[in-house]
Length: 128
Image (cartoon, rainbow, N blue to C red; front, side, top):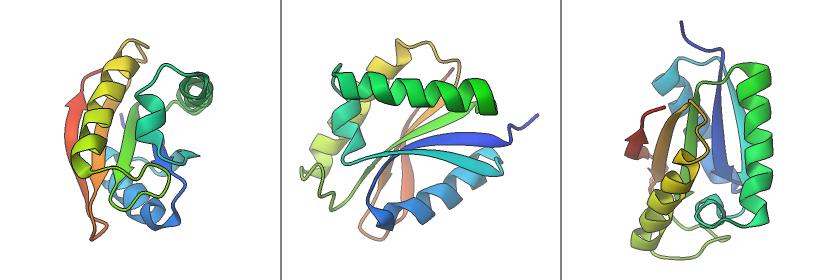
């Protein structure tokens, strides 16, 4: 059975909101997307800083209260909150994915990149 909700940890940049939410609905079959936003979330999640723990608290609300079973962490082209190269974004996504795996969320985890044409692509999918 498909969950009604999926979760996205996305950049606060409004340009990536609609493309990612629509893509996530198509990928998961969810009707609703819980969105947690930060400026440069891949950078934040790649650290073990307090900010990533605060994101985890919000993520657990989505999982535990809304029954979300899928999670996407987003990095994107032309990010003002994390102005690094695509290569660095992808490194941060993968590092963040490893950290997030240690949280044992039991959720499908998608690490995604949004390119300069606002197209979403999966960089890596981590099993629950």
